[in-house]
Image (cartoon, rainbow, N blue to C red):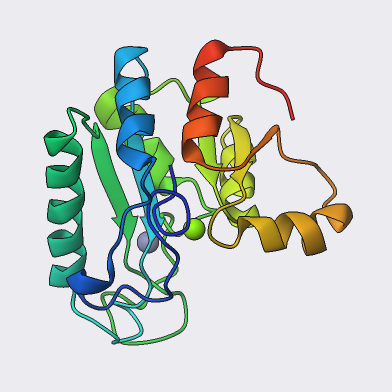
Length: 186
Ligand SMILES: [Mg+2]
Ligand SMILES: [Zn+2]
């Protein structure tokens, strides 16, 4: 799962923990994945660190809030992975042409190595085309949600995409329900 626009409101850079707001369906969506025996992993680009907009500590703070919200609702994220890099902006070590900035596969490869995620049977759910590209880059399937940037991308950009999403859903909970039910198609 992507974070901003998928699990939480897309508000631009979450440069302070107070700007982080989960969507009302997110805890239920993750709980559903947990109960169905799927790994629930968050993969997020947070280049605001490389750009100097906020320190890396903000990301950890936000993910603490995220984890507690999940726990309070009886849900569990198996991992929350982020890329704080940017290939051309800022100072090292955050300015680097890394392998983990989506749609590059590094964060998913980590899920494969650390959690045993079966990428060929996995889905990436996100609100932007880059999330779909990430999925396809590792042989997974990509689901577009219409929260965050999703509705705009679906309406204005998707007609020109060479490959359509494997699934389109109003939001993460609908995507999770359809994926878990199996046979999910766009
Ligand atoms: Mg997003
Ligand atoms: Zn990176």
